[in-house]
Length: 511
Figure 1 (cartoon, rainbow, N blue to C red):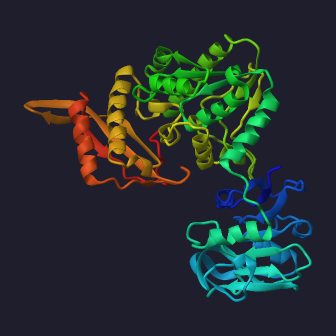
Figure 2 (cartoon, helix red, strand yellow):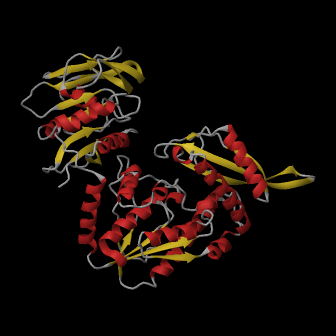
């Protein structure tokens, strides 16, 4: 029985960060929309109330019965959650004289277990336009800042479950001792045992998969990426060769990727069939230049091939998928499912004719947790820490029409760039790197000849989760060496540029 914390989400941009901090403490947690009813059980140890873009004084501001929850469990309100607690319990929340955003110094005014081992003046991060002017009766101040009188507070009655509020965000990087505060809540106030580890997750998940699958058969599309590979390995541990993997070469993979991935799957003992469908995709991409149309052609082509292969296997009952927790959160968020999902994040759609039950062993994990589980399963380190790669692959890194010759050019340049990053020990410090073939030719000089060839753009970004990203500040010497190596070795490319755009306003991919 796994202990857990529930995070009630009021729509904050930082809610996933709260969950990450909790998970890093080896405590399992789930993010739940604020309006969803809490199911109380012995394994539920506490509740955290997230921030929100709303003001607690707006007519339609989200609200819950905090008193009811705090009658059964310890509660920690963060920012909006703290203000809502104060207001509902009889305090007063008004507009701040000025919007409080950025760094502040938290001064402890009372010793308490929540702030144990926190410096007397600790840097915290503010992000709110309301402030608590008066605490309710029965509450006391634990901390203050120069700009707000109530930065941390708690319910005084020690005969009731602990109820705390923080008017800053302990979950963000700029709150330097924020993780300590959250850990104090988890360990000292909720008495969590920190038993949620990769090994624990694997044993529990494989047992649950065995119960779900039994002796039935599972089919799964594999991409060579970390999510699908870890999911397939878990499913394989539960049902062996009753898992049938299909890996499709769509013609826009990286250089030698089809052969290398199949070899890696064989080493892992997975039952995987490789399908060379390059011509199927190339023939449908002729003359197509619109990015969304290209993505749909590649996505629909994958579904066609997968469907064909699936019908060659009899008695399939389940479809395995590498769905991870951010996907689950997205579809069950406070604001409902997003209206538009980029099609390159949703390539492997399930044909409507395939009536299969889903097996999603990773749906409770964040990406970094998937990697930890993968390492625990014995999957090679290089595989686990491969950079993210879009579903349509090089098809959206070739601007304009995709042809077999352009794919070859880009594969060669991309391999030189990626191998260079690895040799220079830069690969692991980068979230994602890739090359983009521009639909632009320029004049060059090679020896005594003038050339008129393509331009390659190099892209490398640093990020935590891909939601925002900064361009990686690669050494000039490295960029110069890579440029020379690409131009000297890839006939058809005579110019290399480096993309120094961040996300936002740019995106990581160019299409």
